[in-house]
Length: 389
Image (cartoon, rainbow, N blue to C red; front, side, top):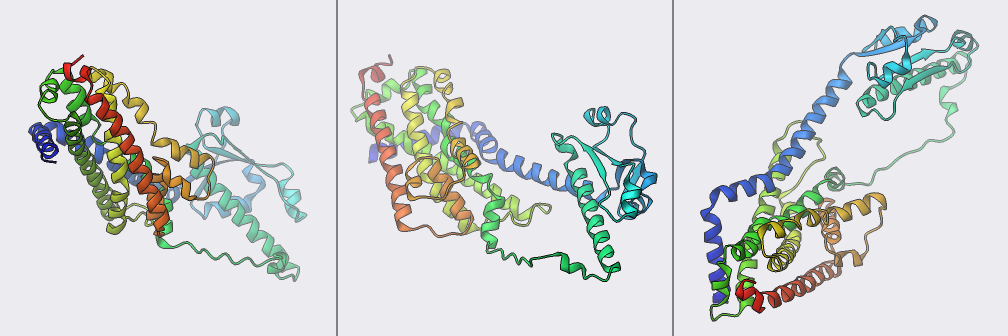
């Protein structure tokens, strides 16, 4: 144990000497994701608010055929303008978001109290026109419903009689579960930070020292190579947990002080601590895997070439659950990345984990980590590793 602690202390001292690398690692790895998410969210909220509250310029063809509708729209923050000569070309070139066309038979249908036809031209693939489509559809639905009720009242019919059912929707979701739904993006960022938080530190302490030919002298000491490896794993895992803590703290403070965020985005201190504890095993597993990979490579560049593949692993559960949402089963807690995703989601929703789920999670992560560390210990103890071959 003393040997492992000595190696741990030596690696931490070496790391802290390079303060610029530490600060860049914390800033880019732990603070960049919260900054991007919060910044994009704030910008999106402000943009949507501006689009919904601003005057909507609505091109209407044959507007003279529906004066009542045009007047009604003008009273609801809509400015009716002349349509472009070529509607299809104007929409495809994004000159306008959408165009309303009053059908030539609209006046006759209106006077006959029949459904009057209105054509809406738009491009559904244009996300930038989504707000305009939503506003126009909502206004037309409101106008149609209001007119229909007035027609029934003019005939002495109760407008409510057109509804055959009274549906009472009772939302049983809690504030915590709504917060968990709003924070669905959080697991991927946190799992990636925990899994690869100490990646460059791991690569430097193994492949980097091997390339600089400083690892061989350490391995030739009268000490089991596995102890040296475990000391390095302890140091790098500690740095990974530190990055995870900083990321959680950044998310927590961002949600607390960002004024324009959705109100459901809340992360309590208890939930943050629970998530940090849940991510600890994947951080150790990631460090162990990277130690094994770095020990089998001869250069830093070769070790870094695996990073692109490793970065894709945490996103696999998110993609699977997005394509095929399934009910949480206990076996899911035995699969890396998927188990962390389920744990974080459960904690964010304010639900209680059973002892069986926690036991399966802890046991499976421990077995996988021990298997990887055993392989890494074999590589560290090999003659090639000691002689730098």
